[in-house]
Image: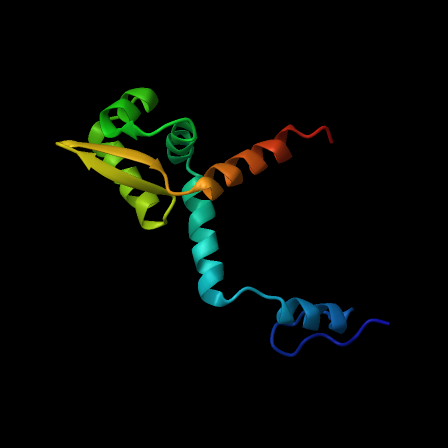
Length: 121
């Protein structure tokens, strides 16, 4: 049986129980925004290349810039965003900043996505 359209959005409602269940298990709006920001950050090809490089070992800004072929300033800008999202962390050794993945979860996210992409469908 098809239920009447929802009053607020003009959408048909076929399975109200499923909708109610989805509402019960919905992400907190703040978490939803944070998760979207994380995926957006990881969705940029250069930022993803930086993260991938850091799965192996920590690297300084100048080496990361050389690796992806952009200026140190451009890399610093991207790393600042990644640091704000807790995807990378840094340490200073004299005048040099070294970056690493913030924790193992970041590498696991990337590897899980790669595993998904590489699956035989």
